[in-house]
Image 1: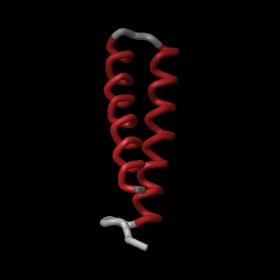
Image 2 (image 1 turned 45 degrees about the vertical axis):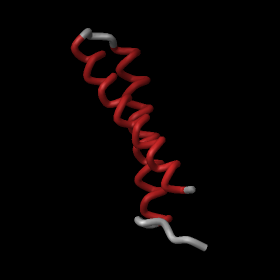
Image 3 (image 1 turned 90 degrees about the horizontal axis):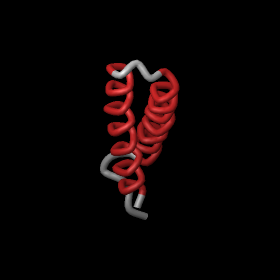
Image 4 (image 1 turned 180 degrees about the horizontal axis):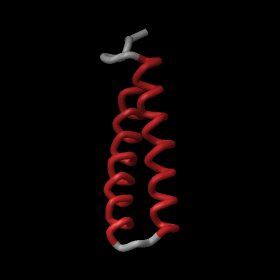
Amino acid sequence: MSWLVVVIFGLIAILAAIGSVQTLKNKQVLGFLFNFGTFIIFGAFAVATLITQGYPPEVH
């Protein structure tokens, strides 16, 4: 089940990265801060879950 968490967190991080680029183009500072913060937090959670659970995930 942890692979599903990695996929969801990864998709959120990718969408936040795309949003960060778009807000930079439109010069929206507050939108950039929220998008970039989301990218950092969810990206870190995805990487941390991938590291701790391993790939492919261990079946108990």
